[in-house]
Image (cartoon, rainbow, N blue to C red; front, side):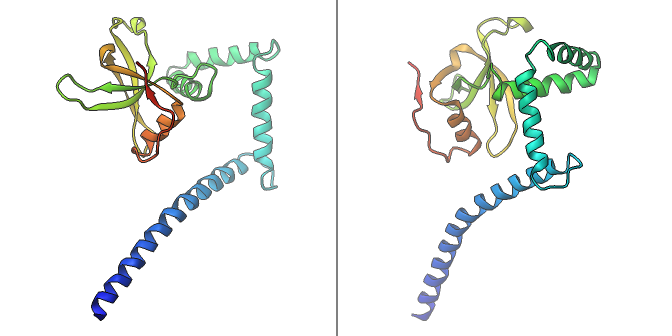
Amino acid sequence: MNNNYFKRLISKFARYFIQGAILVIPITLTIYIVYNAISFIDHLLPVHYPGLNLIIIITTITLLGAFGSTIILQPFINYFERMMERAPLVKVIYTSLKDLLSAFVGKEKKFNQPVLVKINSTDEIMRLGFITQEDLTFIGIENKYVAIYFPHSYNFSGNLLVVPVKNVIKISGPSAEVMKFIVSGGVTDLENIKIKS
């Protein structure tokens, strides 16, 4: 009797501990990551008031964004980009980072068309991804193929595959929800997502 009571007590304790961990760990890690990001930004400039560096950097980036497309700053930006493109290794890093940021938050977002992709003709296994290029003729690939980016779960990486158009099924709904679903390993619920007919 005492042994059964002790087992139930341990089982209840373990269940409550896991529930507590599910509650505490995401909150703690989020606060930790945000704190470290702000702390890193705070040490970029020689200003010694907590949070002031963050305000200065956000204001500067916002002002550069506002004035970056004006006639005054555009020649300087064009000159800087030409300089970046002349250095072989720097060009690859600069253009890759610029294109990646533009794909997520720029005017021409690239991860805006979620799709289901049939992996091969024999199985019914499918992967979730995003169309990044529908026309690949600029690299000599015929129009029967599209470029699909497949993000990895629980990671900030992925694979780019060239897939036959016939294996791609477009999905309607918010791309951010699909990305969250993939990155979370499929444990996040998807709302308002439908396969396009």
